[in-house]
Image 1 (tube, rainbow, N blue to C red):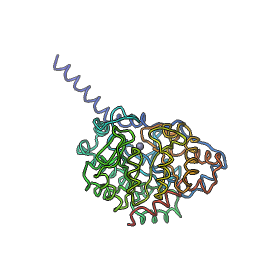
Image 2: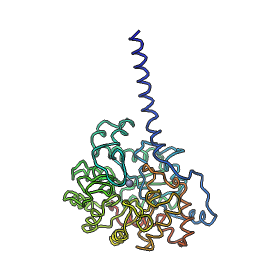
Image 3: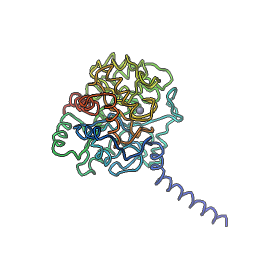
Length: 390
Ligand SMILES: [Zn+2]
């Protein structure tokens, strides 16, 4: 009798475990990545016409690779996949890799002691090596993006160089039904503390890296960390190595002192891939006027995000206001989109809702030419100038 009970209990546990592995990742993805306003979206004929006329729409930040979502298929949750990118006519998306986040994540104070992504990777049945190495974790997501490109029948490609981008732009002249991405990393703890891993990640296709994410690491201090210090000696070596290789430095999530240190030593334009601005939404995450000007002075880009904590509002209007503020402060040529799609946030809308933003920018009196720059032309120009040549 006892044997029978144990057998039944054992079977139930195994069935539950299989169910958790099969259904768990999708359920987590669905619950973590939501939108305030679900599709479909409608805008005025004027806004739609302008949107349809845009040649190059680009976004500097999406964490869609973290969730093991099959990006080749359309989903009714999250903000993005390749079918929806094509529907939105998005030309270029930065796929930014998250490798470690703390339990109880918050904007004020986090340590590196806990590791939620390890649990997520285990549940997603990712390779065992990636449970213990953050570099491996990053490489798993890099490989996934290239795999999507291979399986997309030409609809999607990964951009690694100016040459790739030029070839893609030529192809788009006759076929707009294609889309592309490039790889970034959120937090250089993904280097596992080794300078040589800059090269490993570069060789895996990574072209942009942010020093920190939610906690302080060997490179420097986070705006959401404990010590609020700046760049370490190791961090300075990493930045130098990256810039030798024409990898883009992304100061998102950096402490104020870290931003100061990077702006002081950088030899190339730097960007912030997803941010809000203190001028319209004053919190620890958002950039001061001084830092916005500092980034612009390097020739860099400021990607404005699409969620409440960044722009103090839940609609396209609040993102449009932050864009307008930044453009008025530093010049329109330095402003871009940095949605933070699928970054465990509630986005104002999914990628197919980008026309809503055009509508709000028009409402703020922005010219069609300036809107085209913000919606993607600035990113195109920046990438053509700053990616490695080959
Ligand atoms: Zn982020």
